[in-house]
Length: 557
Image (cartoon, rainbow, N blue to C red; front, side, top):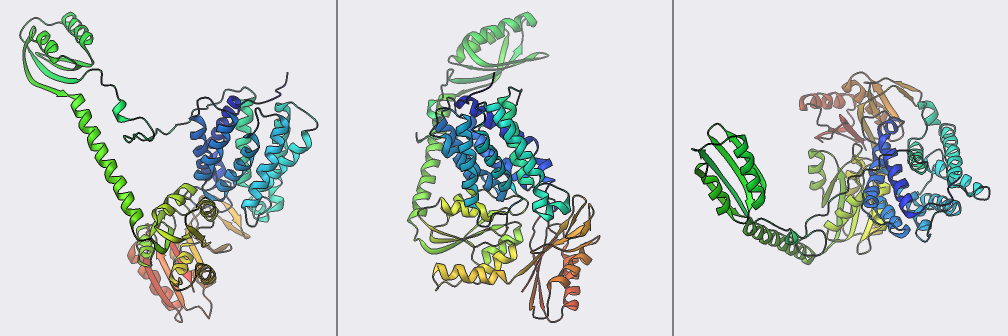
């Protein structure tokens, strides 16, 4: 007997199972990345995206299609990280638009949902590339549309859609030569298939771990949300502690009787016997009763009685004062004179932070290649910058989509995303901002100027692979350029110099080097001296960037 429909409760479980299915394979998916750099990428980004939605889905006690759709869409949209995460969130966004109006999910609803999911995701990407997660999603949508006239059985339908998705995924190396050369399928597409398979396992009745840590809502004494501190029921009001100096007979039987008596008048009982003394702790409404009973065994010392209700009231007052101060600060912040423009920049490393602040960045988001910030991070930053027009510098190609997604969710400010793909591009963009020009003119100038910057990033390989016909071994030093591999070697300094040779031209004027937290200043200075000898027609600048993972960032202008 097949399954004709999926109700809201089953869909909730299937979504959570899909999220857990992706989470279980995230490291494997990370390893499918073409560039073998030591950072969390596709698997991590997609997992963090779907788990942001899973937490909201898991918190729904009595789900309906409408509440599930809202939780999946809003959770994934705000939690989206990296290009793969943003595309996954857009797939969910389209999917949920179809299911929100359905009482139950049939094969027809599923087919329509898959098609709308794919259409929504393709629209979100400015230049869709085939051989990616988009291709896999479209392949499954096309198969779903074909199957809807052939079967009404949900399980048969899903199995055939997934089988076709696997086939399309296997063909992605034929669509993207870089995948074929590296010997991998598209990591984003693989991540999507893990979600599908996890959900299908749940529908098939397999034992699946659906546990998701639901974030507790913060305490709110203002009564607007969450559990009020004032609602806490303190059953026994006095915390009573003392030590009995034993003078009369006291054995295990007496101790058991004493504990039983304390249980009859209170809770949170601790009674510890140690030679000729007994340490006692009890919460009770009548400390005198506990004291009188204890006196039958000996004299008392180190007596301490605290009124917990009074302490609780003091805590309430302090929390209220703290919240009032926070609210006052928010009001004052909003009352500040709004600036005509402001800058938000993604940064990684204390030195880079200092540089961005020095050239005018109002707010820094910590992130980059090692941790892509989410759409929610972007929205929080936008909220903190009190300006009419806000320029966002993602400084990483894998963060641009999240910034664009945040931009689409903001209504009270003009947000302009300058599509900087590297830290040096972001620095150049801000430097070329002209206060007297219009936002549109500045967007054009900043984008044009940063496009003239060549960037190199030096790190190490975490696995064997081949890229751009270059063989790379685990542990090799790699210099990655704007469009591929610049140099590969065994030593950091020699690899950096080789990369510079590939970047510097006769008309180049400035070489800027930012050294990371794993590079000693002395080694960086030696590199600078050799670069000055090699490129005597250029000015060479050196800065402490403090960035992780990447030994050096290089820019040539």
